Length: 139
Image (tube, rainbow, N blue to C red; front, side, top):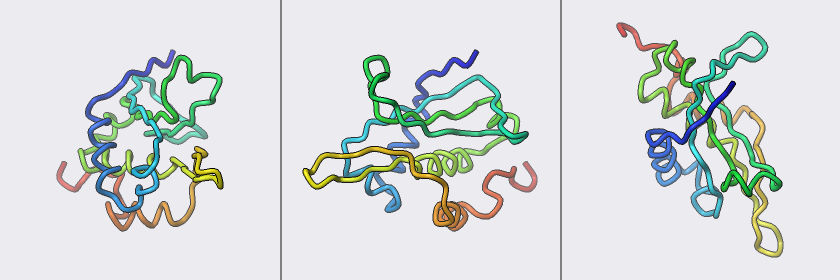
């Protein structure tokens, strides 16, 4: 079973990123509600560890999940790979890049998941380095 709970540390990191990173300006200027969660579930997909995921909440579930997106960090995977605070920040930044916000002609907002693209990877590499997800030498 995958039980997720709100994580204050990840919430703080997420809000700091949204307020300071130009790449997240569209989120900052929107009304998007994001909840930052941690899971004690070890997630593997296609034989690879999954460290985090961004999910858009379907309208039919908003009665019980009062937000537009959740970002979940899979804690056992992050712990197993001994992520530093900077690596967790890079992970959350990466997941926030999946939050899509678009203003419509009538000035309402449309929310969606942004798929991976090369600009996303380039931004993370430029900010955090090629081996952002690997333990630092000597740790």
